[in-house]
Length: 268
Image 1 (cartoon, rainbow, N blue to C red):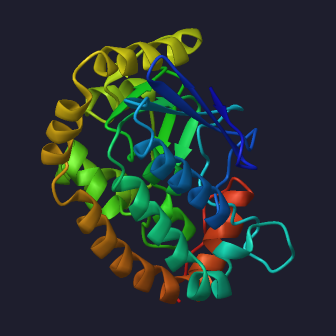
Image 2: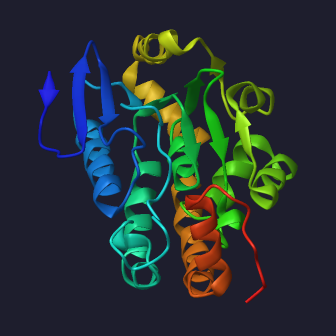
C-alpha cells in the first residue's frame, strides 16, 4: 500500500509496518512544510488500523542535517523559516507540528543514517527507538550557531540520555559518532550501513506481531506527559531563539557553520 498525498515524503504500508521516508536529499533540511507533512502522515497512520508500527527514514547521505539557515543573510540561500523574521512568525507553527509528532499513537523506529544535527537531532528523538550505523553523526550544534536549542530537545534529550550527557552535548555543540551515541543510550541498535533499513523494519515487525491495542496502551503509559512537556518546552525554546536570532553572534555563528570554521563571537 502506498500513500501519495505528500510532496517531500513517501508513505508505504506493508505487513502492518508503515515506512515514512523523507525525500529531500542529500541533506534533508527541514522547514515548517516538511514537519507538517510528517505530522499529517503520522496522524493518518494513527487512524489506519492496519498500521501497527512506523519506520521513520530518509533518502540521501543525511538523516536530517537540521534547519537550512544558509549563510544567515537574507539572500535566499536558506529557508525563510529560520531568518530573524521567520523565528518571529513561523517557527512557533513548526513547533506546534513537532508536538503533533510526539503525540502520535503508533510505535516509531528511526533509521538514522549520516547526520542528525540540530533540529535534525530533535527529529531523531521523536522515535521510540533509533537504529543507526557507526557512520551516523549526532550533534546539538545550537551554541555554535549562537542559538538556543529547539524542537523540544530541552526535555527529550535529557529524558533519553540523562541530564549530564545532554548538557555535555548542548554546551559543547560537538558531534558524536554512532558508536558514541550507542554508548550513551542515544542509539538503541548499531548495525552496518547496508543493514540499517532492514534492521529497523525487523524491529518494527517484531513489535507489530503483538496485540496492537495493548502495544498502544503500554506505549502511551511509557510516554505519559511527553507531548505536553515538548509543547511547554518549545514555547520557552522559541522565546530564547527569537531574541538570540537577532544578535550579532547568531549571524556570525550561522556564517561560521556554513563556512566550516570556528565562530568569532563577541557576546553581542
